[in-house]
Length: 108
Image 1: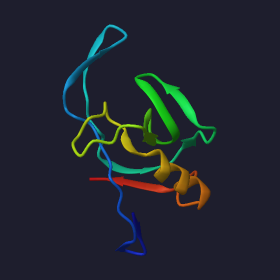
Image 2: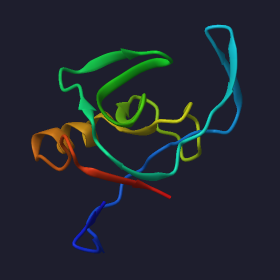
Image 3: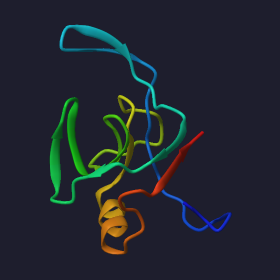
């Protein structure tokens, strides 16, 4: 997390693993999109069923891609494209107002 041009916090995260997967009869490659985004939708009520699995308190930043809590945050890329954080980190984001609607998300 960067605030005023300086790193203020770091978090363990797991992003896309680059592997192929199938969804609704179509083939895809797991990727995390790069770019400059803003949070456009949030779900604060706990676990949400996503198209590819459950997400904890997600904050969507590009289509169906989100920063969200998960019970499994390995030290390597393992997702279909979202940015997984611990559920405790997502609770902190919500409780302390670290992220909200419109927050900039820069993925490089």
